[in-house]
Amino acid sequence: MPENTIDSIIFDFGGVIINIDHQKVENAFHELGINDFEQMFSKAVQSDLFQKFEKGMINSGTFRKMIKEITGLKLSDHELDFAWNHIIGDYPPERIELLKQIGDNYRLFLLSNTNQIHYDYYIHLFKQQFGFEFESLFEAVFWSFKVGKRKPDQEAYLHVFRECGLAPENTLFIDDTLINIIQARKTGLKAYYLMEHQDIIELFEDGKLSESILNSFE
Image (cartoon, rainbow, N blue to C red; front, side):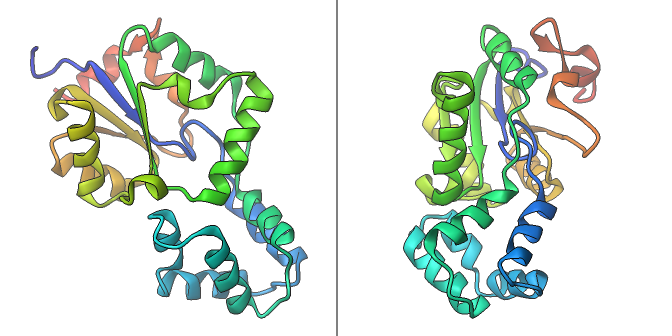
């Protein structure tokens, strides 16, 4: 296969397939009485809480317990999950139709940094909205909390290569976080940075990657 041919595509999830809204999750915690959400978030980042949760190193119960300790509030699990899931937006139907369409022309994969609480919510949301299983859109899916690897660690991309027999030079990776793109390119992947104003449907024409996208890798 020629080096400039793309036969496989790895998609990010949040911000690429499903919409996400950081302001809504901040507002939701504010309504629970957490007025210093950014400070709380910083403490959790410094303690590697989110990374550990996204790598499956701690379970949902431990995560909830630690968030409650950081906030100092007595929240029920339901209240905490409800606020935490406010970051998750909607599935634009046109993106789902696109995935169904391009599946005839490319091997499709998913690589996402996520956690058990969010996963349970948006998987149920998809089935409720579309009537079939989200993961059926892909040949294989890689959720960070299930595989124990997360972007931008290069091992996350290498894991997908090994598991699926992919040639990085013939594989396109689409993500909306620049550091993930930078690290992906170091593994040999063709990586496309989806900017805030863009939508994945703009990258395709008649079920195939547009010529402008293909030419950008030459």
